[in-house]
Length: 447
Image 1 (tube, rainbow, N blue to C red):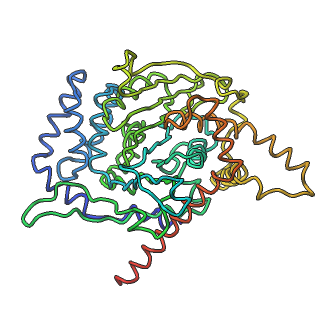
Image 2: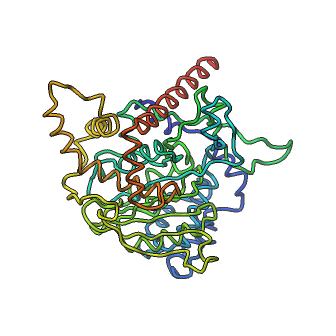
Image 3: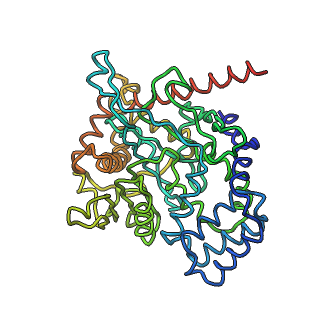
């Protein structure tokens, strides 16, 4: 599995070659002028400037490494990285040059159950739940677990994430420990007419028809480095900076499948208005929650109150504000509160994988001779389970499957109790392993 992750470090000239062909006007001198504007007139640094700056960043021939470090540091010191226009501009560029993800058309479940699958027009609504990280609380992998449970409840969740940078177990670390290889998507160069330069980034051909014989699962995980290969050359520069950069903030905004609904957690309340306004500037997003626990938690908090910045596109036409702010707490879900100390991460991904299995597949651990001990373990897991249920409920409300947070919790509980949540995870693991096997076979045939 570790070998699979290491594949992202392999140099692939295809994305850079395509980018260079489409951005011949970018040079270190043009980047120097942008950097000068950012340093000397930061408030005048606009969305268009941000777009131009990130186009430079993604083309190694148009910048020097020290310029990139200066750019990221200047955005941080001037706090322009917290401006919605700057964030939206950077996100637009990263999405444009990402390896895109195929989203299959929706299937009528009743027709499918009768053996007559009927595909509805257009792709199914996709939702994501993700946090900026950096909150310092090192809690259990709540967003990944919530994503799987939401998929079992009927949502299509394509979670965009990475390995841990500040916590003991990131989303990718957890899934690897659970046996998911997180295989990279196959790359298909875009078609072009004779004599015409490439104008689009390579596409991921990952779909139920081309990448695997198995049906597309309702939950999928998109490993960020696999879908943003042009960011790989920036990794050493990012590691050398003594602070988090705008690229840490952009992660939740650049899911390559372009979800229509999102729950995004931020670790600082001042980022809430910035993120929700940046989401409004992305015309693909129809509904979103940006959440921040009062403890500085980038999740819906199980310990107390959580600020929510909600965006619903088109609500202004009904006489309401498209963006509104409110506060929720555990009682809003019909649940008890639990201190964050009760929902801490384990010592590493393996510990969290065992907790994940106990939450989603409790029957596998039943033992009649140890019933009393199991009841104690179940009670010990209740804070974690209710923490996950709260965040799952938020996903189901944002995706439109639940009308309120209490119903969202009921749907999440049913997803677990029925086994559909565990099945959603197993479908992804089988699908992911199938992709890996198919890619290995193709590599052997090419040798």
